[in-house]
Image (cartoon, rainbow, N blue to C red):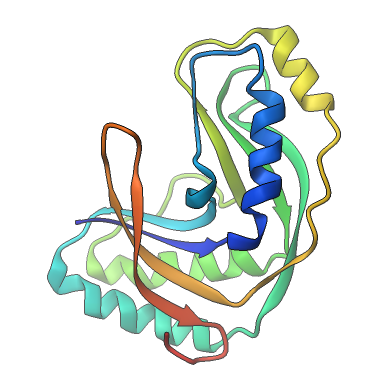
Length: 186
């Protein structure tokens, strides 16, 4: 099964949808994220053997127990790999570095199970869309200057191990296990 580890952002579905609605006008060739799929990916696992799920869950339980809930806020809009050649359009998130520490712990703990370390540095973000063809530079400059709607600070309380099922209409994310920060398992 195809899996990933993420922070759910249920409370931000509506403001993220508003941002997407604003920036999608007059542009094509971008696959936009559905509001119910909004999250911050901590680690994409890809195809994952069913037998490893329990070990992954043990790792996530241990890591989540070491952190208390914390707040995050949206800070900016940007693109990977760069603003001059956007391939992924995202909202940047500030959390005081906690998500980066959690992601690094997950990354290191999964190495013995066969996952390789990412080749790039972790930057917490919310993916808005994936660019399928070159975008108009004028449109992109306008997006970069837009004023973001109000995103109330969000309290991160859990990590989730998701299964991702790819379909014609886009992916469906199914929560497999929830790991409450502070050590409670959901």
